[in-house]
Length: 173
Image 1 (cartoon, rainbow, N blue to C red):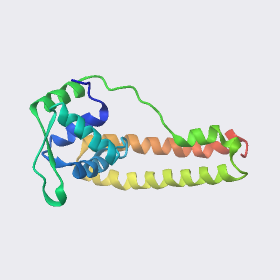
Image 2: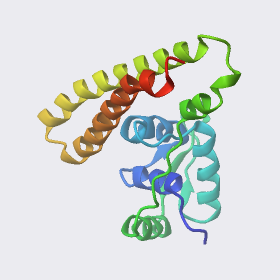
Image 3: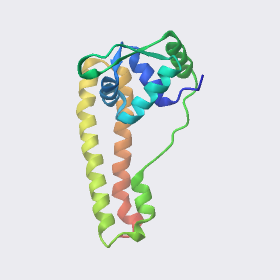
């Protein structure tokens, strides 16, 4: 049995709520963990195939639009319990903008400023959306999701602070 990765474990975690199709898993993952853990449709179906082979999930009969529901097995629940009890892996920062800035000498004049402005606007919009969602979660008393959202809020605020510092760091690039 292979060790679960965070993507497979996330899918098993979502399946604890009941059977879901691959399509439903993509949508549920986007809703519940999409702000801090991205899953592509291809990743979901690849992991579901592996987890089916490993006996961690079973596949039900196709329903509407030929969508097949997946159900967590006892082995899947045990693998998830082992994964969730282990220490989480270390954070790995992957920020494509940083790669662009690193190699910005290859950009035409003014392009880096355009890229940075668009990225800053995206972070500001995400922060505003998180703040709206924060009120909803606080009202609902959803402390677990509120805790993860507050990390996102602080991350976005830190990113905006960094964007404000960038002109001085880059010397007007």
